[in-house]
Amino acid sequence: MKNHIKVNGKLLQTNKRFKQLKERQKNWIVPELYKLYHNKMKERRTTRKLPPYQRDIVISTLYEQIQDRGIWIPYGEVKKYAFRKTTKMVKAFKKQYPKLSAEIEAEHTRKQMNHSG
Image 1 (cartoon, rainbow, N blue to C red):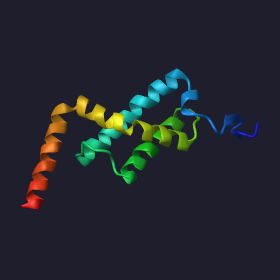
Image 2 (image 1 turned 135 degrees about the vertical axis):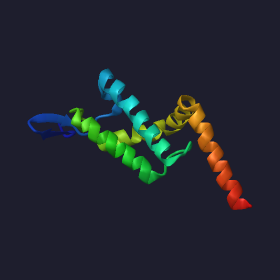
Image 3 (image 1 turned 60 degrees about the vertical axis):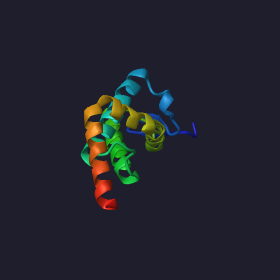
Image 4 (image 1 turned 135 degrees about the horizontal axis):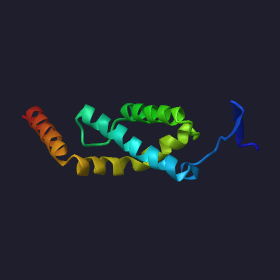
């Protein structure tokens, strides 16, 4: 029982892995992570990986939502999962929003042209 703590009368596993969550919990968390990450990418007008500070905001927001739903998983485990999925989320953004991605890429190209010229 060394990997358990008691919170509000419930016994919680402190070293719980993402893959140990119930299927329906994962099926809620994964799309939520993608949605939050994509929204942050839209907000920042980027088609690339988010900088660490922005990524941490996404993960913290997701973690709050996970807690609000009463799902127990350590924060570090959610962060690790998000790191593993970063490349997939960026690729999914380009697939899901092809027009927006092209628009953003064009903006970046224009900015680079203006700076180099």
